[in-house]
Length: 71
Image (cartoon, rainbow, N blue to C red):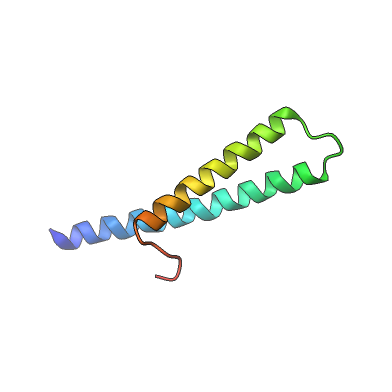
């Protein structure tokens, strides 16, 4: 039973790390577009804040679980 729980925990941690990396890429991409924009839109600013909030939420969750990318 414990072995199955460890597999589930490991899968959850791997998915969390994958999601963190994806959200970081999304956040940086939106940030880059806005920085290059002559007249950034309100929607773009909103999208940036949402992407940033999602990223930092998952980062805090990983810290709470004492998870790091190096194992």
